[in-house]
Amino acid sequence: MLKTILDRVHSKSPLFFIQLKKTALKIGVSSAAVLVANSTMGLNLNASLLTCLGYVVAACVAIAGTSQLTKE
Image (cartoon, rainbow, N blue to C red; front, side, top):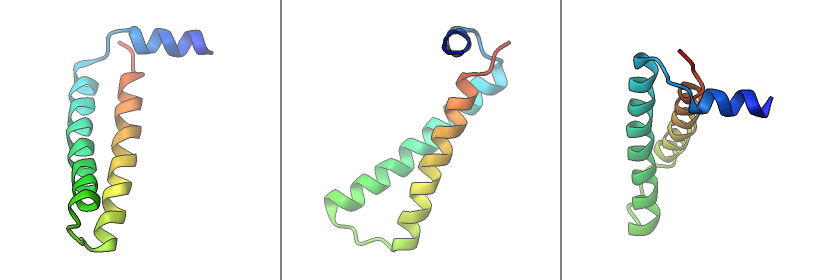
């Protein structure tokens, strides 16, 4: 199973999934940056907003990981 996963990681992905991965990474990094800025700069953002940003980061990681494992 590990060999199959490694083959998928190193194989070429379809263009749609490459674009999806890039978009997910951009959104995820932006959300993570807001979370880090809140904790280091003391922005005192709403707790529900921070919770949503945490879920967005988790979803983006899952989307990017899944997109990486697609194979042409």
